[in-house]
Image (cartoon, rainbow, N blue to C red; front, side, top):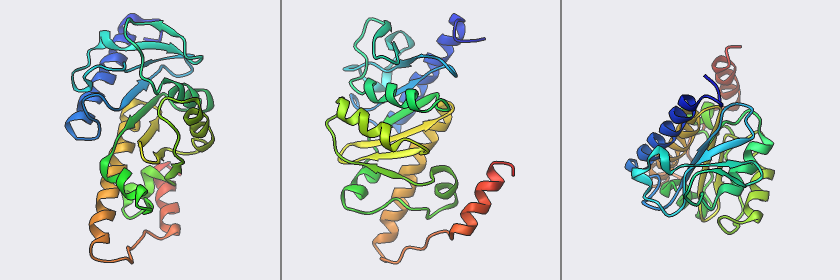
Length: 217
């Protein structure tokens, strides 16, 4: 099955909707916030969630297909206002086939408070890598899309100042796992910071060793 197969497209759309439901029930997005997109590898178009529709109850027919130029190809609803930065990520990263933008409360709060998201757990060290913070820009703006284009190179996770987070991956599961790992890591850092300012990190040499093992080297 490929991108021209209607059944494959329907399966991808269902996966996007399931991802949104899980994010909603985990409190990482709210009724009208957050967005998810996905594409087939190498495709010049992608499916994205719509704007102004309850995110916890999206159906495949609600999704919108958009080209990398931002032009709507298929769908009757308005695509997410964040479509420009989804398109920018796909343009810059051929390895990315899914983008998850959620509003992780603890991650966002820590970064606003000036606390970095660091490798305090094995999962954070292996999955997240360096978590970059993107300066503030208005949601849905070309300014934000341009900033994300600058910061996404080599990154799996971004935090948007005063806004939320982005996770990217080769598929939806990978991208979703990134935003979940971000919130889990932020929660651990927050709890630890209540008791100490000297939070233990995993040594760099051990992170490098774990990364090699995870890549099968």
